[in-house]
Amino acid sequence: MGDYRRLRVVEKHQETTDAYTFVLEPADGLPYPYESGQFATLIFKVNGKERRRAYSFSSAPGHDGLPAITVKRVANGEFSNYLIRNVHPGDELEALDALGQFTLKRVQPTDRQLFFVAGGSGITPVFSLLKTLLHQEQAPFITLFYATRSADNTIFKTTIDGWIARYPDRFQCIYLFSYDRHPDRPHLHAHLNNGLLEALIAQYGLFPTEALNFFLCAPEALMRMAEITLRYLGLGETQIHKEVYTPKPVDVHFLPEVNPAIRHRITTRGKKYNYEFEVFEGETILDGALRQGIILPYNCKAGVCTACTAQCTAGVVKMLYNGSQRIGKAGELVYTCIGYAESEGVDLKI
Ligand SMILES: Cc1cc2nc3c(=O)[nH]c(=O)nc-3n(C[C@H](O)[C@H](O)[C@H](O)COP(=O)(O)OP(=O)(O)OC[C@H]3O[C@@H](n4cnc5c(N)ncnc54)[C@H](O)[C@@H]3O)c2cc1C
Ligand code: FES
Image (cartoon, rainbow, N blue to C red; front, side, top):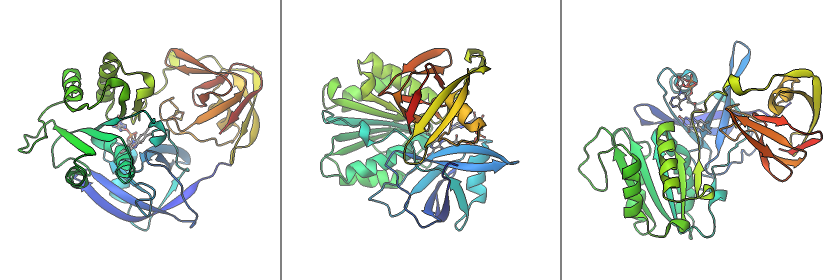
């Protein structure tokens, strides 16, 4: 149950001292469709148990022949170190189909300028989105604020510098090096903070706030700071798009008690996920499915990565996220990893 794919590593390139790109080809010879900004979920087996990690595509369909992911080493991180040290061309990785909502579907016809705020390995999905946008004839003006430690540590810097030179009237990038005093403009030697972000938006924003759209992918503290600043500047929810790399585990204090005596029937439909099963009261739809060997798509199991997104077509789903609650009804998107059946007859399109 569930469709796992095998992806063969055909090339491995070093980007910086601690980041590598892996170019992948489907080992079964079938296409591996994905959109710019999406991610591959890699599946690792440890002592017979599955462990999952998401890696965004740094490639862009229509621009790069094969999908590629870029992995940055996390200090003491189990699988980022394993991939960088032990995975080489010819090796195969187990993966799910591409997932994710951090895509160009978020760009709206009214957008005149797109801002991207990237930090560290958060550049990966942004790089994929930028490649696609810059190769389109018509696209909004693009401004990238890219925070890294130093010029040497900046993933994809050579390509981005090439874009700055090639598309001066469509693209600008402001690097923020926290450790490096760099001689060239527009490089800044600074940590991005609320005041600086506000000043940069005032300096580089070409249009009124309503015509701006922000894509954020960076370490958690930077994302939080950027979102607070944007909200303070009056941007609405539909103008701020986030890809979170470091999901927090769900706080067990906020979880309901599981009661196997009360059960709810769930139906899932879609190209691959046609199932009918029961979940216990107090058990998430995903956990109920997995308990019965039904493998629905998931990654973080924490309500953050969007891998488990489903469209509710009937019934009501209650989503619990560390003390806060959101209700999903017919026609709305829900996350099965934090979603509980709140009514009978929950029907999901996955
Ligand atoms: C949607 C999504 C897309 C992602 N795309 C990419 C990508 O393109 N490139 C990439 O390199 N990573 C990406 N990640 C992060 C990646 O999935 C792993 O979390 C990361 O490689 C660490 O895994 P690990 O097994 O090495 O570390 P673990 O063994 O899981 O963790 C080790 C320690 O590091 C901390 N930690 C875990 N993840 C991070 C992190 N990302 N940054 C800082 N500290 C961390 C943990 O809290 C823990 O203390 C993405 C994550 C998500 C959810
Ligand atoms: S698995 Fe990540 S949001 Fe549900």
